[in-house]
Image (cartoon, rainbow, N blue to C red; front, side):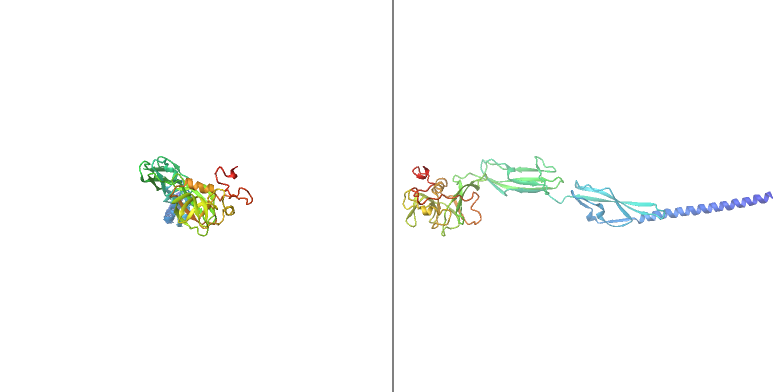
Length: 375
């Protein structure tokens, strides 16, 4: 009996051992299969990107997910790209899937993203060429209109070029006539650079430089006299005069060539302070019946500011005298048409002579001490 029990017990132990070993084998097999599943699933994870989109722009928002074109698995970008500085930065994508046991497997893919700035600094000058005379004061930065980063932010003048600054270099010798170059180098905060230059023409001061240039608006009967600016160009308006032109007044650019205190005019009349412009065309006062200062044609005087002459440019005596005194022979005169603007100083209002006045024979602007209008 005892022997039979021992045999049964042994048989049961053997059977149990076989069951345990079988279960363990099955479990190990399943683990190995699952491991293979995870490995296979992980290896299947993939990512495709558009390399063109791996470019970010300076100070512009950048989403790394915009570069993803396809994936096997769910994708997340790890971190972000800092676009406040140019250069190369890495972005890592995490691609993941869930196994049959709801366990996550993932794989990382890293790509370089290049931050670039397509905007260069902008340099603008007031003039492409500056003209000065020998020994003039000269500031090379005075002709610089603006230097910006290209986005509307001004850069700072500096002795050495660095991000956010610009430098000015020149070889101008104001004591020696010739052409010189002023160069500007600019660097934006992102490190982009630009350069531009302008010419400085240094000339000997001519002995016969005329101080003024005269422009006559034929349509609006106004004269404007211009003086020289710091670049010795006639851009500074200094005096405006009301005048009368005529149908025969020519347009063009001329140079005065003669002058006289009194001049006989067509029609048997006379003009004070005549300055020859071209041919028989003169600057002169309103006509006088005789060469007497108290014999002006007052009815003609009251036409100043309108077309009234035979072609000459009539002026009040004070203005004719001013040209006669201040504008040397050879002064440039431009006669032109502009219906919109008389000139930068406007058109002066002419004096009006009362036809019943005892003083009507005098030009009210004549500085002669005998002029009764001055009393």
